[in-house]
Length: 168
Image 1 (spheres, rainbow, N blue to C red):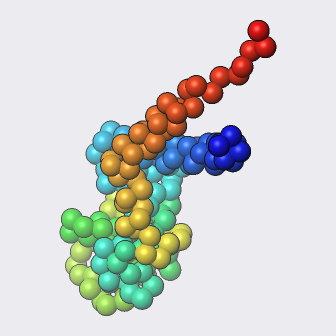
Image 2 (cartoon, rainbow, N blue to C red):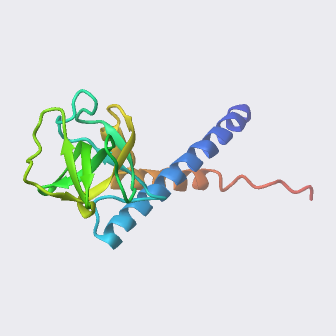
Image 3 (cartoon, one colour):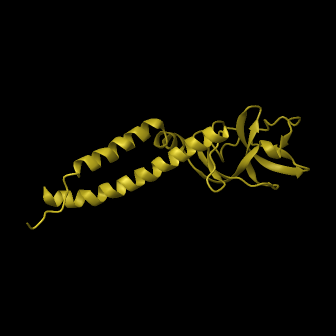
């Protein structure tokens, strides 16, 4: 039993550190969104976006997780996330003139009369993780936070009797 314990303990510590990082990021995201009344939580100008529609398929499909970077000027050819009539969409900038963007997608669904201005652009896509959005939602959910707290608490409860033996 003692040999197994010596092997399991370092593994448990690594898992606890990873869970702690996930917990901190989740708390940060929740707090940021609440304090700024925003749908996106930026950390060092980076955030994530769950792709919910097929307007940019096959490049971006429903269920992909897009990593976005907030910039202040987006240029022709940038793939951006923008607010489009109350929802968030992905599109490619075709033109940027006087703070207004012309955007296209793969199914030509963008209304040409809709003005996409700087304040409607969330950020540009710098990377994507195919099919990871649902896993990411589970990892950063409230239920996962509760599980992390129980797991860490259980670890410390079970190792509370791990005290160095005195030679007295």
